[in-house]
Picture: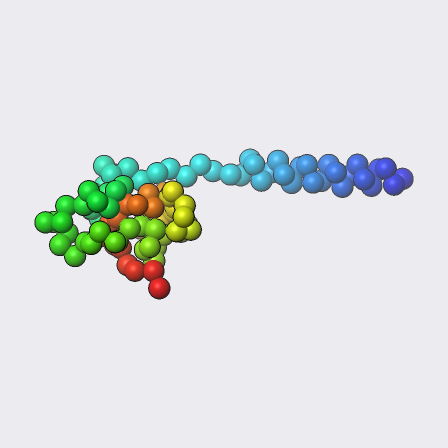
Length: 101
């Protein structure tokens, strides 16, 4: 009887682990050529922003220190609601940048 319970618990744990893997979806990186990226002037590297077109941009502004960045400051990339949750480069920038409070 005890071994049946252990087997049942083990199978439940294994099944729940597999379900977690099945529902995991890959998240795409934002492409600089995507229409939303073009509209917001997104660049994967903040150093490559056209400062003539975006005069308020400064070198210290990066996605990783933006309020919209959904990742840790140390992450290579993170989600951004401005791009439908797609991944933006931590060292990137767009005109939607707002300092993280």
